[in-house]
Length: 354
Image 1 (cartoon, rainbow, N blue to C red):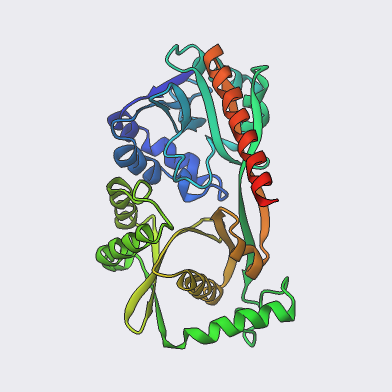
Image 2 (image 1 turned 135 degrees about the vertical axis):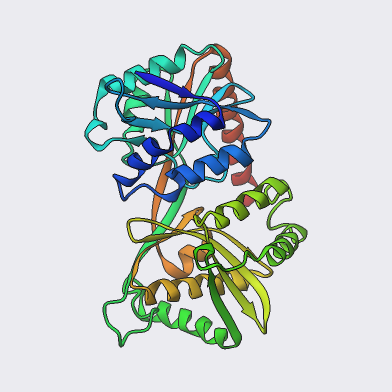
């Protein structure tokens, strides 16, 4: 049995079911939480889509066994809620039902029965997500491909005599010394963790100033740092979902890191806002030191394997995948067209480099 959630009132009615599914698996990130998806739907989805959240029930009058947090965009593509800003996407499925073929088949048939949907585009799926093989099975035109990367590495406080940099045992002594030289420059800086649960005030003015500096320098665009995104991160902070790390140099705020503390003892660094690239690196080191002093875990750099992350930390790099299923001839043509454009761009970049 499937129940469709298509507006915020209906979404509020399934909060209990959503929370139960979210709590059963510690590997779900805050991106899968009810509050994150409700806030995304309330703020980021305005005037450009239709909520299309699919709730699956194995038995009537029971709690939901699966929830797919989806929406239909203006082009008729079914995709994860706020996938532009969500680093890791997936469905919430009861553990004992994750290999139930009939469930996936019923969900797929329900999706294609909607004539307003011409394409299924499930992006930012981690390797091993069962949505990849199951949803990709039903259509001979389905494409499964890598879209982006993310990176992470473990950091644990096992020896109180070791510094946090010394605990990066996967690095060579030379690489650790390079980080220690950068760390020495942090003597004049102050670092503070802000959390709404501790009644810390949201640093709105500082965030706006740093965002504007990044836009002026061409690091980010005003399309990305728009008014809705600013409202979105403020609401996430006020709800206690988002934690903020503030770095000040000579009492001036120079870098702000937005991150999520996960249930499985990991930390996802989501967005960093900074006045200069060196403060980006400094903030990362301060976050790593703080995380280490809290006992450590898996430090996740989130989407994007930027050169400085790989160069300085040598994290484990893993792929994110997309299940892309065209449901109409036009959608098939658009996918082929986009593939050709991407191929030509890659060829052009290769020629320019030579």
